[in-house]
Length: 292
Ligand code: NAP
Image (cartoon, rainbow, N blue to C red; front, side, top):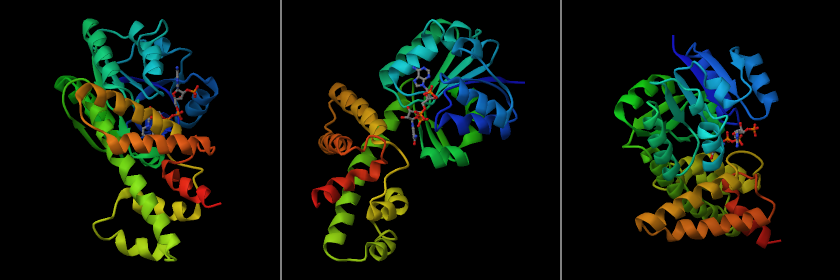
């Protein structure tokens, strides 16, 4: 029986780990920096909580992580109390954090030197996708490691794919965020424009969402954008973290990201409006606040 550890029970990690226990029937040991969340998870799903990532990883076959950024990931993976300190030869580390391709390659190298597997596997689909177990998972790493991870990842995803060597999952997630940034700004401009023109934008979106302008963002966010409600969803602070990773990578590979860089600055303005935890659709708030 595969023994599993899960590090990071945030908005995403909590339900993802839950699916492994409930749908997968795995024996899961969890670690969370704020211990109360780990206790809540054990209450909901069984298994056990450990005091450190290292203790959680002890004796397990696969260790999953879903924490905040590069530094958090380094800390829980290779820090003094990190999982790598306890993982046995042949064990596998699967990282669902949205982080840089650089840290993915670095940890992949350290893992291989220690006889471990490593797959970078950032996700898309948000809180609802995690709770409903229908995430999209973009993976990088060695095919043999991915083949071992895939049946476990399947318990909380609808789409998953190995996209190349270590770091490729993170690079694919960057493509995802770059594509979303310009799209949400376009949607914000369209909704604001329509409202200024005196149109019933609920009716307009009902029509145009069925045509070439349709998108997940339009379908799922137009109503709250019209209402000016942003207190939910994927936080602007997280988006800026992701966009800074994209912009840094673009400086390396030379791909121009003019719109992404501009939208990143718009998000900086949203932060100044008090929107650090607002959903990314709050780009429209810049127009709404300017009007007041
Ligand atoms: P979250 O709710 O803020 O949870 C972050 C988790 O990481 C918490 O369990 C936190 O512990 C833990 N953590 C952070 N720094 C740590 C450290 N240095 N040491 C140990 N634990 C640490 O974030 P989330 O929304 O689940 O997002 C997690 C990752 O998924 C991020 O990289 C995010 O960009 C990505 N993501 C999020 C979404 C989304 O819609 N939320 C969608 C796609 C991808 P505490 O409980 O102690 O704070």
